[in-house]
Length: 356
Image 1 (tube, one colour):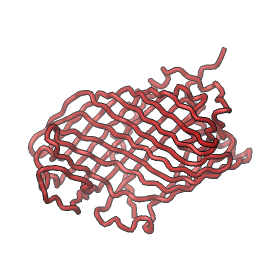
Image 2: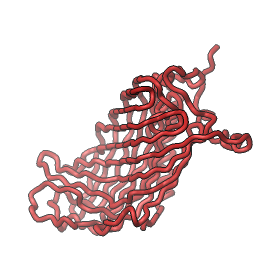
Image 3: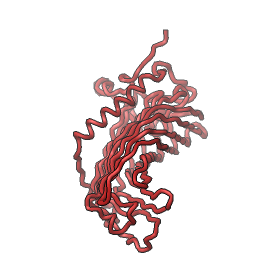
């Protein structure tokens, strides 16, 4: 049974809104085509329909810690649950609620993970917006490469905490012909193949904490730490393409890369040090399924890899992901409900440039 814990909200609010303000400010500097009509020969938006879904999903935030130049590596994974959920999308606003039922997670005896994983992936016309706020406690060793031959397979870190926050804001240059809502939210229908460049800004900050220093008992000195803090921000560039087969079957892939400047500070029983530098990150998305005017069935996967600045011979990757299977049905809403739902239309709050 999943236990939810939220702490460090003061720190979260302060850093999150500073970083998001930077990303949002960059968003308003980008060219806007939000008033322009989409090309309906390529896709149709279901703005007057409520898109409902039943889905299964699993979210995770894991750590990959590598000793630079020597190859020792340890992968730490949370024991998060496979969830069953329900959700709805209306005019680019999405709300999903899910729970990890016991019958779906029979083998969770390795370590008990307590977590709250908030991920928002919004795709208004010409925009890609991702928000992250993740709180994890309890990890186990998923993989290990190094000089110690007898790392126990059941090695767990029940007190280890990982916090990650961030935002990614990108402009979709060919939003008149390509809809990511069709692939991810199913609130549109992509009828013809199309592709587009994307560009924007992203930032991340967070920490990993192992106050009991369990790693020191099993792993060589370069891979030991008690606490690690990081911050990173920078521009990104990518490409997305949807292949449509027989109007209804689709395959969508999206990749973007980021060059960020950031700071990492790491401490253990032996020393404490930090440094500034540049790092490259990547963001992958994949979607496949069937989509039509009334219903859809599809699978999608989102993976975000943030490599933070090296500190004390560490190369550390924070890996965040979400994979799910959706069963979708759309229907009209009445005038009273529509009036209320229109207040949450995200397009009302994005920059617009009207044609003269």
